[in-house]
Length: 252
Image (cartoon, rainbow, N blue to C red; front, top):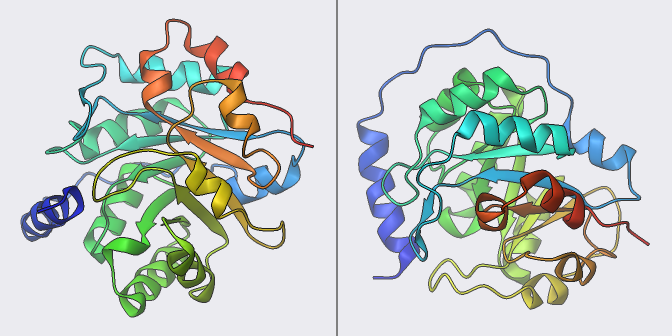
């Protein structure tokens, strides 16, 4: 069984046993899409709160996630991603709630979302943005969840891994499209995936996810991608603010 199969099997069990979260006073956050569209001359950073992963194990188990999130915001990230999967990534929905209360930038609920309950929960916890992964859902179901989230006032990052998934994301009306450089079956990472799937600029914005360690890495995709999502590199960085600024390269 590959990583994705294991995760989805566990996620189905989790959805059947979800507990409600206390709804917080909703913050008025800026639109991530508009923030990116409004400043096209730099690569926008989504900084991720990521304690662990299935492939790397523990990345940073002692992190103060609130301080990490505040540092991301101070450094100028355009959004903060919070992993809420407890089994494979050592995160919780309460991490999202806590981070959402201390920052004002858009907050992304990063999880393997397969059901409307998870979307409602993400919104109640303070997310303004959710992740939907094309590889995890039939096209009809993906479209239903995308529309449901949009109707709730959430923005949606639709994640793809190949040309067929990219076409599906466009067909369901996604305007924020991610290309994950990590193969979800093997968890191997290659920035070449984003290079191969580069798209011309238009109505959509494109986010390259995973594998960025240096400014040189970011420059490889900066012409065709408006943003990147970075987790492990920022979670391991000695100087987080400095690393964010390094990765926030100018676009041609």
